[in-house]
Amino acid sequence: MSLSSLLLEFGISQTDLCRATGMSRSAMSRMVAHGEWPARGAQMARQKFDAYLVARGLTQKQLTACRAALVMASKKKLATVSSYLTVAAPEVPKPTETPEEETMLLQNEALSPEARKHFALPRNPFLDDIQSPDDVHQSTSVRYVRATLTDCANHHGFVAVVGESGAGKSTLAEDLEERIKADKRDIVIIRPYVLAMEANDQKGKTLKSSHIAEAIASVLDPQLKIKSSPEARFRQVHELLKASRRAGRRHLLVIEEAHCLPSATLKHLKRFIELKDGMQRLVGVALIGQTELRDRLSSQNADVREVAQRCEIVELEPLDAELESYLRHKFARFDLKYEDVFAPDAADAIRARLVHIPRGGKPQDARSECYPLVVNNLVCRAMNAAARASWPQVDAQVIASC
Image (cartoon, rainbow, N blue to C red; front, side, top):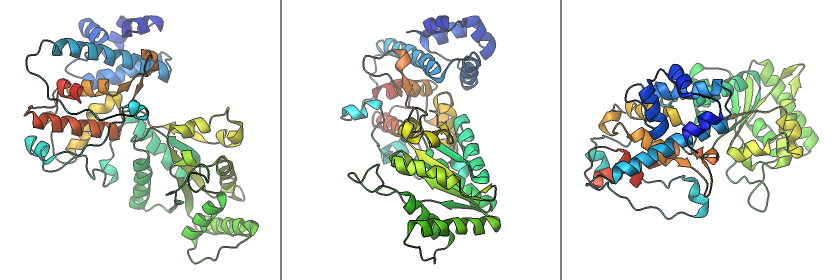
């Protein structure tokens, strides 16, 4: 379905959008028909476009459908333009994909020395690129998740951060820990090891509440001899938390790969956040996991209903409208210029490349895969392809061939 049809269905006129985004009628017509944003102020126009649709009451699914219609229109235009070009765009071998890889989570490809030389890059801007909180790109979604995690640590909250693979969940958990250290806040981060954790013992090792108790005790008193009886062990942990809280500390339990937690352990987490000293909570919980965790914490899941009612779920959204600012930030951290590598049409082409519509699906079924790790992989592939063909910049043709 085209964007014009979707807007008609939602009762939104192009005149309304012109007023909301500040775009002229001709620019709006090009955007609706061809997915072509204005050359100047494109990022601001995208943000105003999204904000207006949200203000009109569109759901996230409807908003994604509108974005998908835009990028589909952009793809059609690119195909039409490419058919008139006499110079072929550089090509790269397509990776062999299994059905599970059809979500377009592209295989990793390192930036080649040839590409670095071609674009005059002193180093790879996507390798070991997160060394401090300043290296984390502050998209709207990232700022909200950051604030939520900080509040959880300060007030012993209960939150689940969910997102697709490569969305930056673990980076934000590490970012929280670094900021706590830098600010010298008296918050104790407790991270149970999850190296072999699986949802059942047939696939790996389950993380049980007793293991979480041991992790808390180990951090608060490494010399403590853990009692063998469950009742005595949990009493020890409770007393340790109370003593630490009275000394002015706060405690945050961070569990990564939380989508692999057994249901029993998820239920027991409610009991950890209910540990108190008088009326003061003693520990907060931050779960970090893939989108399956959101489904498991659904209020419709009777097994963990009590947990779902208490846990705030926040999701890391794809970059989409903030893609160009992400890449500018990434390059600026290494004193590199975005314009030296990317043509003006590159960002729109990346967005179009990373919209996934299931086989046989409609624009309403589309979802964006425009997450940092996927973007990094695609950009590296495109830069390598451009260098091999002596292409001056990464543009829409190069992206389409990757």
